[in-house]
Length: 390
Image (cartoon, rainbow, N blue to C red; front, side, top):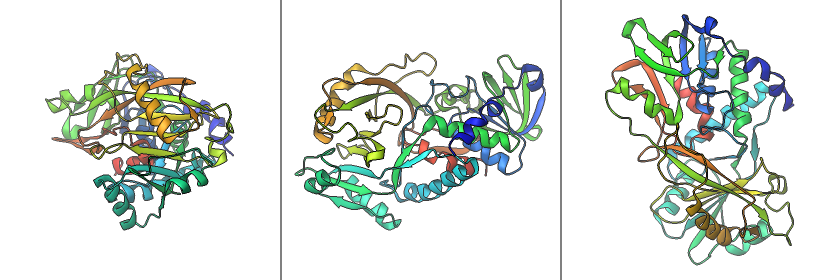
């Protein structure tokens, strides 16, 4: 049942105190307990490594990029290697769910709205076809009929690709699941423990200094610190890390009063969706049935202004509301875009090309980095864990 993970919450959230942590020695220390760090700790513990997962805030905090209840999971990508990666990621999600006796993935199917005769359209179709991922092209009439009028599009300029291999991941619950699984396999977890310095000592391993928990020694360190990697890693590199944290806007709309209130619910067959509004970006906006607010639909912009993870106010960008209203009126005609039901901010940590950084730190063979997931990495979590621990 889905309660099995919750029943183990107390064990997984157990914090090592200063006396226990100071001077301890591990095979691997993972810095950052968002989805990437939690999945990496689990993958390492599975391989019989002595693992410590360190989080600077409390587990499940909302200051990073791994909280909330609704993240898209999909195989529809415009590059084949991401499609192939997602085939493996789906397998790992389901393996973890079975081991945890929990469900964190809700399959809904997905829609990609793409401008006709653009490079993105051809790349999406080619990548999915070559990887053997089935999809269906819907015209405006079929789209309206299939989803009871929930979705529409300008048929003269857009095409809709429908894939059944898509859904929603409950982000907070997924992080907790991997933390519980890691702990059950022997990993230690230390929350409210900020790493202030990573000292690579070559053949002697790595010494981590913390703000108030003393020092920890490890053979290897994996840094999955999200936007904070930009602050933690430059002293080791001798230069800045090319990561750009941004603040994005998320709104939640109600269904129009004269329509079925279940229209945009996952239980009623509502899919996740992505809008490629031009041919120059990977994507422009996306949305999901809002698992955190049943009956609402979540719509998010995929871009925003630069931010600092320590000083950001975590409030939505007011100038983005009109952009989301316009997109909503075009593609979600039965969502009430006159007044949002709720709004919040999300933080991405972008790379220039929106591809991930999964590598050994140059000149520091003991330090592995997973960073720059650019607003589309969550779904790859268990695969990233598998890659980083290898």
